[in-house]
Image (cartoon, rainbow, N blue to C red):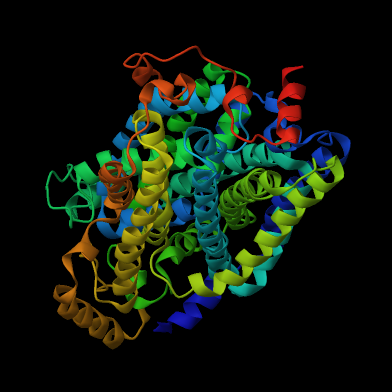
Length: 587
């Protein structure tokens, strides 16, 4: 009987056609960066960051999908469905809800303000302290998120080639930094289009070939049904249940709205479109694209179970990490077809590159607009602006490569990402929501609410992650067995780990056990509640003195506002170069 090492050696047949397919995708991205960096060079800061606000709807929509559906989703979601069933896929209802909420309440305000950084809004609505707070939270979140984005596809590459994670991550980062720093938003968007098509093709390829090999979709669905992986929504009201319909719907709406409507990473795309109508069209296409990709990822998870139902590779450690499950399946399914494994890995890296380039481009915008421009006495020259933006991209990229060593020792990436993001995302979403819906909240109250929200979410999220990493918290998977494995493995370690997890799960403080899908909602709620209570100490704004364009449209009619003013007329201490930029855009 073969050992695990022998099986892996046999499967790791990443031949020259695979490397050709893999490298071709990188060369295409580099070519796009060179094209927009030299032949269609950005002539201004607005052109570099927002494509001159003249981008087209379809490329932006594809870019939004590619940026949001990172390698984390591409590898994490099939593993989620394989282990726990389709319950998580009901978050699709939350995605649809997010589209409505964002399109009606959030997008009109940000798009009409004609800003570059969403955190400029916080200065106008509250004061400069809130703008700095928002920018710092964004920077912290990005620095925590990007190493995960890089690490996940490196895991996949390691599974199919045996090449070390820390060998491939610097190479990926250098390529991404190159085309992002050269071409700006236009290069990022058009590489995202290529990468979105690559992602979709990779998922379809795996689904079609795997389904044919196993005997058709009927076999996949039958085995999923027999193992309770196909299930109706869980309507439990217990907040500690990992996935219920309520946390996926309401928690999903809040999480996705924060990520899509408030975060600079995504809103920067919508702001690059010329009209609000175009932005709403891109939002609709984005929601449809995300739902299609999630459905494909979910189906692939069921397909993997149907293939491995009698020999779970996670238990046997044939897949050393949970997020190497899909790459292992690809090796067995596509390995016999020259170049196909390479195409799949190119798709996974496409997802990572799109998310990484998006974050790097957004970081350059936020650092320039929120950390540099407000504090310089003289307007920055075009050359200085270009150098600052490009140095930020290079510096953040290098930092994230170093932080991959930390991510390597954390838990499942899908839950890890959403948990860590909630530390900053929840309080930030609460502050923006207060700005849009509660005109009587002032800067002092909002800042106190934001600080307390971060403290509370850090306490809950970090303790929960520590409990997961130490094995104190575990979740029951759907049935998995190893009864018909045709290779030898060490069963003793797996049984010992399971016993330890089950014994210690009862000792965890209940608050740490709430579903991670509630984290963003929890953080936003704490922020808003503390801010409302703080008005008893700091007083209230006069709602009638808050400019109506800073509030969501449905709120404006309830207050007797004065005449509307152009943005520059009420923006406090607006830097001279910012005024000039808006004048140039207007011309």
